[in-house]
Image (cartoon, rainbow, N blue to C red; front, side):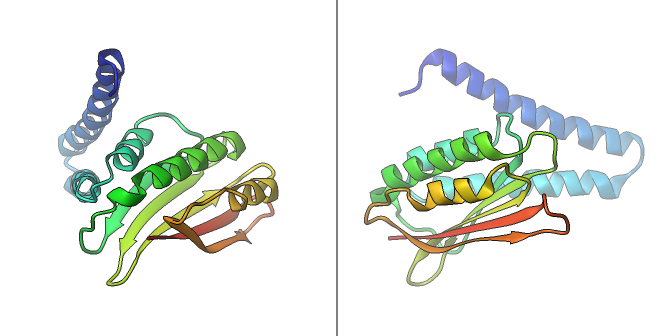
Length: 184
């Protein structure tokens, strides 16, 4: 259980994000830029829909971690999405939470701070399986070491590597790092 002090901080972070979006909407409406206001409303709506889908996957630790991680500063923009039918993933909640926690720690350590980095985490349910897709775009210091460290992560029977590769971008510093795990 989280402490009251931590709970208040988390509520404050959530309120801050919501107020930022509302300020943007108000500003665009004031400047009569309805198209931009509608874009912010759509982005906010999508985020809330994905939060709802995430909460229906029966994995409270992983869901809480993903939702609250996006509220705090990182050297990248963090987003997540959920696609496909709802599933009960309670059996793998502990191992998925441990993996996500390690991933975010490693990205916080290795992502360059002054570049436009993005991380998108998607939980994709298909008829027979559920996949965790992670896409990092931007700059990592010592990307090969980080990839090796993640590849050596001791996954239990709940998670299995499917894909793990790095592609270079337009410049030598830009890259795209793709991870895919099968959730059982």
